[in-house]
Length: 418
Length: 157
Image (tube, rainbow over the protein chains, first blue to last red):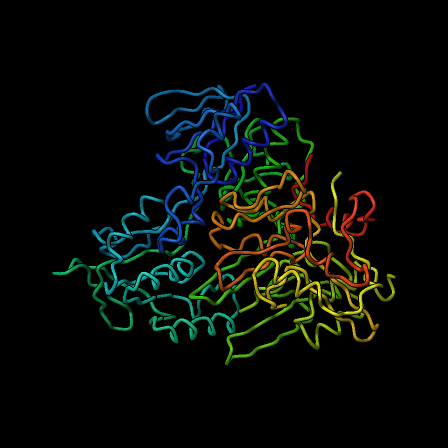
């Protein structure tokens, strides 16, 4: 049995390890198109601030990790898949036959259709290669424009600010991280950044980029033009599915999979940011593109590749955590709420604290928070176990910070449980 | 023999010596805010509930860590944060469904219970045996296990 995994991110690596645990004799090949050992994009912001060196981003620290598991790591790019012959064509000319294939190719940054966006000095922040380019240009005092204040934009924002650059953020939505925080929290986060000396333009678009005498001229739709040594483009990512054209593997937002993470082609599975997997909260299939989901997917897909479809994916809870200049934000599940559901909110604008809980009946279904760093995971636990909160729901409506007590009251030997 | 922290909330008086001991042992200061074990107060029931990491087998924190900074301690079975490897991304803090991995702003790393390497200071400090460190098979872990299995999305197959 030859398992081929395309994509050397977290989903691919966890799949390779799982396959080896389940099948001692299978041949395992992990194909990645970047020159470095498998690494974590999540660690790049910490590389940018010199908290770690490049090896600190590696998914596995032991240089012999993959060799020790008899998994071959191939640095090449897959050009196409012939699912009838079960063969991959590699860009360097070779072919690779597989018995089971896992597509874990992640996503790529989307370049918005703006004149001049291909100018030198415009970079996404996605790969280690991008990070090296950014580190060269983001010198202390340099003018830097960050286009996009979504999750990725915000997480690099922190790194850029601590490199001492003169930073301006341009976001076309009306608040920061609009897909993770509601208007109150997203606006508070903007005020927080401004209080730290970062200019943030929301509801603003970059309309053109021009090469100027020193660096770039970045034109905005409010009429301003910003000078910049570096423009970082963080306006979103899209799943890497181009190479699947004509393969019979169906795609929508990402690769369509069933509850076993199997694609429309029998021996082909998909995992991680490229897969449109089941969402725990909605039961529907969507691209979540988050680390814990990639880990879930890698494990489940590999289990099903090794043993037939034995492990069903109950769905992953969509969740995010973000640190922006020291203010930690997080969101879980249906943080925007459900029709007819109650909500509990605590807002302390002066301290940049915010906590919003969303209920369906007496079950917690979503949450978002600013400034919460203690026991935050219990929000996931309460959502995923669909714990009936009973009388604790009213207590949470009064004081949403008591989530940990609500969990303990429902699960530990106290009160009625004793 | 693998040992675990066994918590008997009925015996807890809420004295918080466990929090002080944990903070001093691990952070060098008497600061309950830095403790890895936390005593929750239920005024209406007149109860105190000490709570910390159960070192669960599923180890969501470890599975979610993108940089291999959480590892199993072979001697104690605890899941330990390697401070020099942790980048501070906090994914483990949202992944742990028990809420027992916390971010420490002062160090920029996460902290969780590591059983003090096999001699947990909280258990030593507890004057009423509400916290003991005993044979894992004796801890009546079932309630926690039930929670764990309900939360599981990618458990061992």
